[in-house]
Length: 518
Length: 121
Image 1 (cartoon, rainbow over the protein chains, first blue to last red):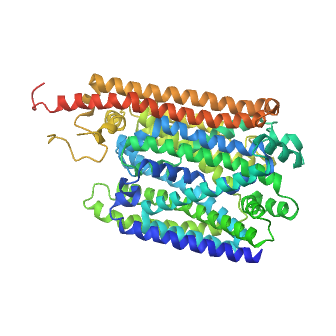
Image 2 (cartoon, rainbow over the protein chains, first blue to last red; image 1 turned 180 degrees about the vertical axis):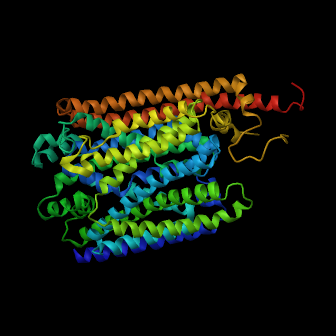
């Protein structure tokens, strides 16, 4: 295993240095705030589609979900269905309109309707909460994984990931982060095709045979091909709620939504989702094959190794076995290659998160609230954007080390998705579509949504275990309706002015033809 | 030509939004695109919640054997991917064929009405 670790570090080193080439190129093209936050609106629909898909072909999917399917079979695939469906509301209701709004951040979209520092600050805060929780979870996860894959200590692993992320973002901005994401998405698709073909060649190219043979070697037999091993059917409402939070939560994740700002117009934003759905769907189906294939092919030592770290090592171990065996040199190289690609994946995803978090700090809190109405903001903003990336990057790295590998990462991610689904999404939808929505509705909707999410998840078994007040592990089914209720309540209690609804309506709906202007 | 408009950002359109909205072409475009988006959103939610309801309340149905996919559950997972792709394709096709030409026509109309000299109605 120690040689594998050295090769892993070499592969990782080569990939990181290759990425520095891209970052250097991107840095020379990043001057204004628009360059930094939206890559100067220069990303094409196809490229943005791959970048969005890349966000979801994360270590969480490639390593985590492969592991879940390996361990629990059918139930592991549910998260993939949730992820692909989460992009439909984005496509039908949000992507094009957000791009047409012409903003850099989510909070700026809301401030088009309510030009008011309080709304801007509250929206920025809730975006920041979601991005930071997600970032902490990713960095802690990265630390645990790198520790297992490379033999580095947890803190060293987090410092390397956090440090590289900060440098990438501070220099390369959104352009650099997007290209790193695109390249790793292509590498992962390529790896996925090779590995799934290798697996299917073992079962005579039959998916049914793969499912049956994999079930036959699982201790639970045919139950492996049916629901119930991961999400116990004693609590059906919780399963429904699990589906809702992962679908609607994604539609409110700021680091996903800001990707629509990087394309030239609304049409490109819409088309980028078409490409994203294609690439993501393909990759997700390959993940199903990888998980089932691992169950079928990993035996003995390989199976013991794969079950470590919550099943997160299944994909690299499987690569080793497909490459001829863990003890063979080629097998070791395969493990190292997959581990190296996994590092790159983590790095690409955390970089996107850091852009989102520094956007909330630099563009919303500084440029939008503190320096409101001041002259020459545009001159100062690019510097502040880079500075925020450095400060947020360092703080997030330090916080992730402090949080430590023993912390419950499920809590962080669960809360991030819950806030995104129960605060960000309701307010965004109301702002775009509901004429009677007003300033108080926005403020109450956001703050209420965040507080309810926090309270519910603390009362749930995720935090309190068996003593929980609430039997739901995924309280979205309560918190999402409450989020909309807060928006409504604030709107009827507060002043009746609807903000610049007409202006936002015309801009978001008709922006498409601003680009078609002769 | 539109000297009276304030400095605009990319994506921003023309002069007075409440007036543009009253243009019949624009009004019907807005109505169509919203109705279309929300209808497809509703269809998506029904299919999605239906799938999860089946997983949650009738897991035994998904355990049934299937010749092509190993179990009925896996058949449904694949079907969900195909449905997601089909909905995406349908939305993109309709927006390109119907909504974009409508938007282009509405644009010409609005521009024609705005380029009249100030004061003429």
